[in-house]
Image 1 (cartoon, rainbow, N blue to C red):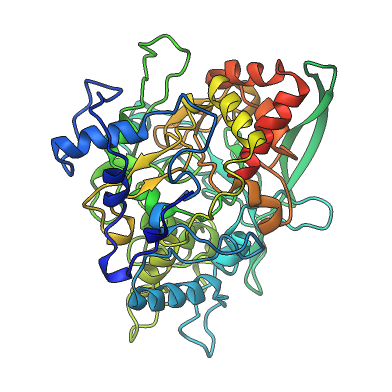
Image 2: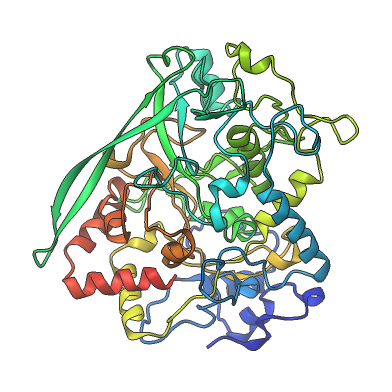
Length: 514
C-alpha cells in the first residue's frame, strides 16, 4: 500500500523526502567506497538513501511504495493504450500547459520546404518519419517491419570503423560518436520529399534456432540478418556496418536524467574487480550545447547525456529538422548527396535560425521529460512476489538495478528527491556475440548496449500492440528476450533457462507487472 499524499499540491511537491523519512532508515554504507559522494545530499540523507535503495532480501510482501514506479509523479491512469502518454502527476498547473504544447509539437507532421505553413517547413529532405509520434506511437516501443507493420519505428544506423590513428583519436575524444557512411550518412533514410529518391530499403531475414529449457519446453529464437536494397545513390562503403534500432519507450526520461551521476557510476565495475562476471562501464557523452563531457544515459548505446540532446538528435537524424542544438537544415544528407543539399531549407528568419527553434525544442523536451511511468500492478500478488525473488536470485539485478532516489537539486522540482524504480543501471554491458552489431558508438563497442529500463515493460502489448523486444525487436516475447542475453548476462540467462517451468512463469509474471 502507498501513501495517499503521493499526489501533493503541485506547488509544494519537492519529491519523496517525506517517504524516505517515513521509513525510519538506519545508516548504511554505499556499494562503491571509491566513488565520490553525492554533493546534493547531507550525511543524514546519504545514509537514508543508501538504505532505501539497497536491494531487498525479503519477498513475502511488496516493498514500501514499490507500486509508485515514478515516485510522486507516477501515473495512476488506467492501464490502457494511453498508459504511457500521461504527464507526471506532481507537475504544476502551468507546467501542464507546457506539457500539452509539447505533446502537440511531438505529434506535429512536418512538411517539405517551401510550403504555405512556414512554421512546419523543413522536413528531410531525406527522413525516416514525419513526426516524433510516428516512431514513438502512443509514446511506446517501436517494432520491426513485419506482417502489415511498416518500418517507420525502426531504422538502420550506418557506421564504419576508424581508418587512421587520427580518426581513432577523434572517437576516443568524443569529437564524433561514429564515422558515418560517406554517401548515406549515419542512418538509412527510407523516405524522401517529393522529387527526391529515398536512400534505400531495409531488408530482414530470420533464421530460427531452437532452445530447450528445463522441463523440456522448446523455444524458437529468430536470428536476424540485415541488408539493404534499392540503394539510390550508389553502393555503401565496404566497411559500413548496419545496426538496426527500434524506438525506445518515452516514459520516465526526466527521472532518469535526475538520477545522480555518482549513483550510476557507483555500479560500474569495468575491470570486474569483484569477479562476478559483470563489468558495466559508464558511458561518456558530449553535451550538444556546452561541449562538456557528461555521463551518457540515453539511447541504445548511451550516446546522449540529456533528454534535450536525445530530442535534438532525433529531430535531425529521423525527421531532418534543424534545432538550435543540432543546426543541420538538411538532416542526415551528406555533401555527396547534392540533390538533397540543393533543396531549400525550412528555417524562417522571423521565427529563428533553425527549422525548430526554441521554444519548439524546449517544449518537446519538457514533454519527453514529464511522461510519467505507470503505476505498478499486482505488486502484492504471490506469483509476482515469487517472480521478483527469482529475478533477484538469478542475478538480473546485477544490471537491472531496481531503484534510485533522484537528486535533491534536479532541474525540475517534480523530479527532485524521488524514490523511483526503473530497473536499470544505465551502464554499458557486453551482451555477447548473439546481440552484437559490430558498431562502435561513442564509448560503446560493437558488443555493448546500455541496460534498458524495465518500467512499463508489462504494458507493451497494451500500448504498442505488440510484444517485440531488444534493440531490433527480434524477441517476440519476454522469454525470448531473456534467452538472447549473453556475455555478461549469460549466467542470469542460464539461471532462467534452468528454472522449473512454474518458476520461469512466475519470473515473467513479475516482469509483466512492471
